[in-house]
Image 1 (cartoon, protein in one colour):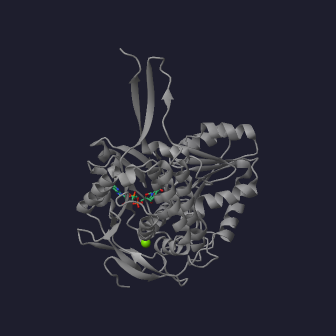
Image 2 (tube, protein in one colour):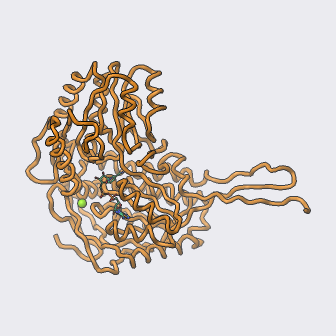
Image 3 (cartoon, protein in one colour):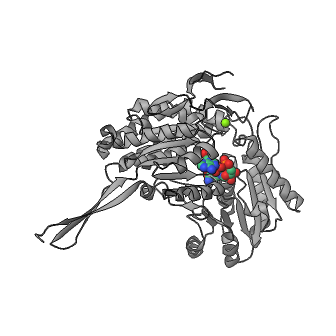
Amino acid sequence: MTCAPLATELKAPNGLIWEQPQGLFINNEFVSAGSGRLLATVNPYTEHEICSVHVAGAGDVDKAVSSARRALKDPSWAMLSGTDRGHLMTRLADLVDQHRGTLASIETLDNGKPYSVSLGFDVPHFSEVLRYYAGYADKNFGKVIDVGPEKMAYTLKQPVGVCGQIIPWNYPLDMAAWKLGPALCCGNTVVLKLAEQTPLSMLYVAKLIREAGFPPGVINIINGYGAEAGAALVRHPDVDKIAFTGSTATGKDIMRMAAATMKAITLETGGKSPLIVFDDADLEQAVRWAHAGIMENQGQVCTATSRLLVQSGVYDKFLDAFTAYVEKASIVGDPFDPTTFQGPQVTRAQRDRVMSYISGARESGATVFHPSDKLPSRGFFAPPTVLTGLQRSAPAFQDEIFGPCAVVTRFDTESEALAVANDTRYGLAGAVFTRDLSRAHRMARDLEAGMVWVNSSNDSDVRVPFGGVKESGLGRELGEEGLRGYYNIKAVHVNLSSR
Ligand code: NAI
Ligand code: MG
């Protein structure tokens, strides 16, 4: 397929046709990259190029940042009331809903996730997050503080400023919504850098941003490579804050780079979250959630419960039931087929990375189950995999694999379960299956994690804070807590006396 420089017509297997933007979205215009370079984005199911998009270099990042800086003080944005900012956000959510089929098609073409999931979850969640934060836009203000009769003090919540936001490829629309929602709510302006593997859906949303009536420069959207456009954004002296979702290694690079200008940062990085099944658990329930917790979204989920810790009394029974369930439920295939549960991994590199963990585990003597290994003949597919018999220090037991690959181990006591669960550099999430109320709450308290599920896994909610401890990140997204990274508090002291 050949591509026009700034837009091209695309068609999905379901028959939908749309005009796909390919440029950088700066100051409400689609523009060519100054670098003149393009990158091809690939459909991971067909392994063919979908189209190419413009690649931002440092000069383009500079233009996007200047545009956001101008917009920050422009009366068309700076003088809007919170209520009016909320209206703009709601209008964007409505437009996203109206374009739901097209956006879901783009997401599936570019990322490989099943169309049923893009349509049923990813797109509606985008508008859900925007509406949630639109509701906060006129309910987020400072306090008057009682400091005695001679003085008055109050606080103002003010925007942090120009926010650089860097997102990954596993939920291209939703990671953008998690970042844009609170930033716009609080009156900031944004330069959003998309993941180079999945640039198309948010470039389409850029059209809707303009249509919704956001003033030029409030939201700028660029595509480009992490080490170049991403790093230029993090280093830029005129960017006030960086919000990032991605790997722990890149998160650490960002902390180092942000130190030069002491930028505020929020980071949501990797995980290797445990799912702990006690002897007294409802096993059928534990099996269902264990499957969803590691196999959904092709296992490309930061909060995936990828380490299954199962108590000795039910270990064999659980393992049999779990592998049988994976065989039945993990239908692998064409992401546009409505029966498909698992599509391809996002790129060849990610598929190869998953496969190298599996072969490494096999070489070290682990048992490798592929409950359903009937893979399509093309596409970047990884088979649903269950690994047992691994050393707890093995790479597959300790590292984030980011694929449909669960490791299972056995424990005897609650204290052993806790010790194994916490023996990781990560601290994103954890799940506990038990019918013992006291044990459930003890585990919830003692797991070193930002989020704990009792008798479920990965059921995140826009109203509930999301984020990790240890090397899983800094700060929280979603919920009221998600606003915290997007305003500064200013204290004002007023002398009421004649002193
Ligand atoms: P990555 O962390 O390198 O990329 C995520 C985003 O950061 C992309 O937009 C990328 O362009 C940008 N980036 C990369 N290097 C940068 C730099 N030096 N400065 C600024 N921005 C930079 O992740 P990658 O390579 O795509 O995936 C590797 C692994 O990371 C995955 O296998 C998975 O384990 C983990 N990951 C975790 C995610 C999460 O949701 N927490 C999402 C994506 C990946
Ligand atoms: Mg792609």
